[in-house]
Image (tube, rainbow over all chains, first blue to last red):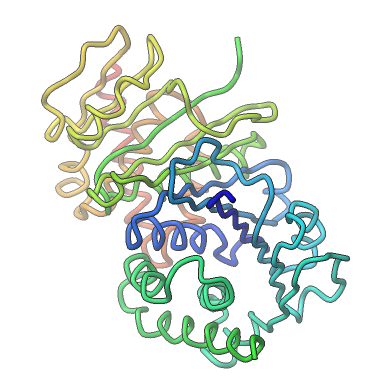
Length: 182
Length: 182
């Protein structure tokens, strides 16, 4: 089996999906010695306000950087879920924000529903960290990188003065994922 | 001739090359209706502290998102110049920070030398905006996007409260490039 893992973070513009993907790629590459590519394609949909960002992780060289068969898809909005769920590989994991994605696709893989934006707003206190809540949950559910590597990558990337807020966002995401795993 | 334009921003980690590339891609895609991809690959060199980020722009669909023959290379450090100058296409444009890249490659293309970090530190007052100074210069030299689109993309992406600083950085970069064009 190939060790290549393809992950897509999708939502609306301004939800920090690109930054989230960069953090995940850097957690794997800088703190775990893996190879990673991180990319986004902007077409007409970029003007419509939707946003997606891909990460490919591998222990070996990554010949083709574009995600083609997603192992993991995060969809923060119904529009992004509808658009990208067909790119999930059979048996892939779909993580959705349950308050915004109510119409779930038919899939033979696993779907995890979490109130990501609500957790960011209510449990952390800032909607803007929803991307970090989502990363915490994704990593807890999948183990694509360790929580320690993720934490280091988050702290290396977020603006000075927001470290505590972002650490709290990570913890809230991890905790929420632990609850659905049980 | 294809309308595909490949651009690489390279330097050391922390110089904001990834953010610079995202801003350039969004200037083209969101404010000019072009297609754009923006990507970075992290391999062993990511641990060494060097950083590169690619942008591919096109009026049509972008089949292969990875940059292969660069039209434009920005090199903020000697290491990044040495590593990537061989990826420039014949006749491509190399922009270097003249204080850090002193050993220039043989090339049949154009080389533009600018004191980018020094301009950021002395003319703008903050080294951290060197990436924005560089973008201003690159766009003035090449016209890959309009200055107005670049300005909008910068302001949409930088932290609140830093708009004036970044606008000044853009102006300093544009001015520096105008001086070498004459």
